[in-house]
Amino acid sequence: MKAMCRVIAAGLLLAALAGCGAGRGGYEWAVEPRLKADKIEPLAVSGGGILEGSLPEDEALRTFCAAQQGELWGLVDGQTGEWVVEPCFSQAPALCPAGHLLATGPDGTLIDDPELDRQLTAYAPALRLEPGHGGLGVEYVWDGEAGQVRRHSWNESGAQSPLLDPSAGNGELLPIRQGSWKYNQLEGAQVMEAQPKSLYAVASADGTLLTDFVYEQARPGSGGLIAVEKKGKWGYLNEQGQLVIPCKYDGVWGQSTDRDVQGNDSAVWQRVWPAPCLESGVVVRRGGEYALLSSDGQKQIDFGAYQALAPAPGGLVWAEEGGLWGLLRPVSDS
Image 1 (tube, rainbow, N blue to C red):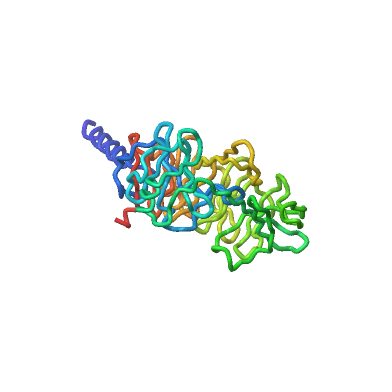
Image 2: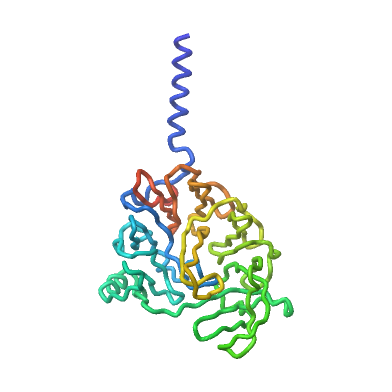
């Protein structure tokens, strides 16, 4: 009997040891946890319309992430885990559509600092502060009469709505809203605008609709997936219009702007967006727990395996353990 008890106890011990890393998959630390931060997010584009909450097209700028420490924000390198700019901004820094950094000081106004510019350009030659960019709103709208997609854009000088030029895009999936013609005073002409509170469909880069207009929100596609929202929850569609990740997850990426979703200057408008699909996959959140899914919806890192996860460039993923952030990579990449 004693021998049998020892066998059972040994089996239980082995099972417990095997479960210590349960849910973490084949990942290891590329950068050991050492960064103290309350939150890490991708460095977003801020400009109204579909640009809000999207990633910069410049791959070099995707290396940077915004990190919060207490009441202040700074910039970190998403490959080395080091601070690029120590926390000194009163809000999360973002990029204007031209790729310049929008960062606010303690008084809430945009910073214009030549010394900080020199610090930024040492990391990315094109990166510098933008103290007064006018902003640009962009959205894609469905012209039902023509049966085609129009690219509606607006800024302080006016608006225009030409038919979509597929050759001018980056090949990603597009969020589409139903539109209607309206007279624009600044342009002195009719422009196609999205109908207020209209639902979203998803289209390929050439403007071919892949879905009906059934989603409450959709964000610009990245990594072959596009995020869509139903009943307040987010999921992801692939290039064939298939829902490969169901709409049952919360947003992970907080953004705020002084323009509302239609591009109008107004009270601060806030949303929490879904994470972009990067090389490592998609970070999703359910309640207070995070997981990493592959682009076909397979679980790579289980919920609760780490305190928090955040998207990182180059096949890495941010992970928080013991109150400190590090960078994970697949074991096969080591």
